[in-house]
Amino acid sequence: MKLVLNEEWTVGESIGSGGFGAVREAENTAGVKAAVKLVRKQPGTEREMLFTNLAGIRNTVPVIDSGETDEHWVLVMPRAEKSLRAHLDNGPLPLGEAVSVLCDVAETLADLKDHDIVHRDLKPENILLLNGRWCLADFGIARYAEATTARQTFKFTGTFAYMAPERWKNQRATNASDIYALGILVHELLEGTVPFTGPEEIDFAEQHIKQSPPPLKSAPPLLAMLTTECLYKAPQARPAAGNVLARLQHIPTVALTGGLASLAEANKEAIVRQAEADRRASEHATEVERRGELFQAAQASFDFISEEFLITLMQAAPSAKVQRDTGAYGRKSWSIQIDDASLKLSELRPLGTGPWKGAHTAPAFDVIAEATVQLYIPGDHYEYQGRSHSLWYADARAEEQYQWFETAFMSNPFANTRDSTAPFALSPGAEAGEALSPVLGMHQAAWPFTPLVVGNLDEFISRWAGWFAQAAQGQLGYPRQLPERSPDGSWRK
Image 1 (tube, rainbow, N blue to C red):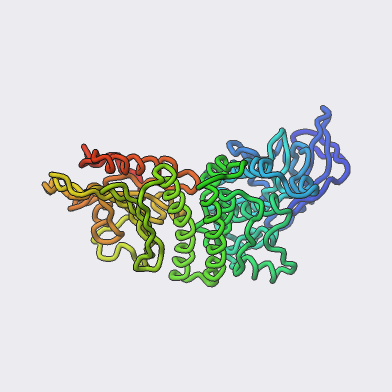
Image 2 (spheres, one colour):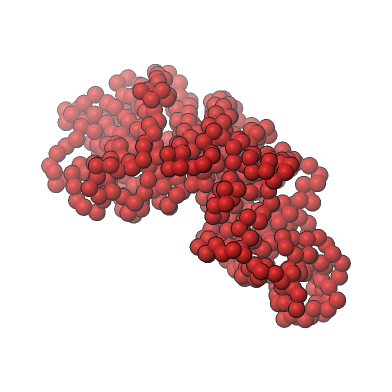
């Protein structure tokens, strides 16, 4: 069979199928071997032709020729070495190899997000080994994120084992849906099976919407935590692709010891608790239920941040006095003390709907939960008693992309006041809303909204450890200037 497109191709034997088309081997007149995909013309299948140019997107199988016949849309691609599905026929992958595969795919998802493209069918069959990299193929049901969902867009098409809860609820697929499929892929690479196995369509729907995935048995703590976040039922709580890639690149491949091993065990317990809470909170997401799902996500990551923070401090100062408490909301807090200096992380507090209630003006973002980190010293001769920062679980940078942020506040310098705590924490509400508004008021932002990324807390912990050391040595004084770091542009207006 001959095909004349931009080049002439001789089409040979079948080598598989993909999405809506058959895939066959092909060769041009120059002897270049390729794979040709024949997509039968029917309403909606022409959408695959939208994605013949994927320039600027890493790790994708390029289209080297394209066209049409009377009955088919035609795509010609380089002949890949093998699919990830074929590679998995030998069983689960070693950790290092699995992480390498996931990094390649996460790079692609990060670029797709930047181009507002949602793949919608991420699975091992569509991941091919090409030129030493694992590349994403088969954009047959992909869509531009802002495209109108018409009748013939194959909205509900996909592979049941990898389909995110929102798709089973007939909701719009987003980049978060691809992140969910990546979380499923982690299970398959390391455990040899997907977490939800059906077998029937109705079973898959029930499992994805209502059930928690089984815990990973062979993943290090940071990868297990990341996978749990990718598989959150609430799409807004899943990490963005760039965040996933950055964290994958820091996954340790050796066993942890000492305090970090203890932290790993605490993290496993947090994952189990979060998985069960996430399962219970997944159905029929009203606004209150949506916030409940997001709060469970906030709780899981906050537990990890809290434990890593405290354990790292204890390793550096083993003789410090440590006290763990249960706060008014029944959640854990802790403090660590050396002489008269104490550093405290408060309990987590949930926020109801409308966190900016009472504010005349308010920022554009939403806050789900808050906590406070406070460093206290006895008042010096200027009556300075230390500093405190707010920790907010919010979509402060990108709409509906929730994560923990650190920030702090200060009094308006024209108010001619000297606060005993500077900078200081504020709860979301009238005062904080005023501070984050363009209107000059009694309070201002004094610290940029700084993301707290689970598994990459070194700067945050080191900074607070340095302030704590100064406080313990009697050297902590009122900041020389406020704000210490420019907060401009660090949150959504």
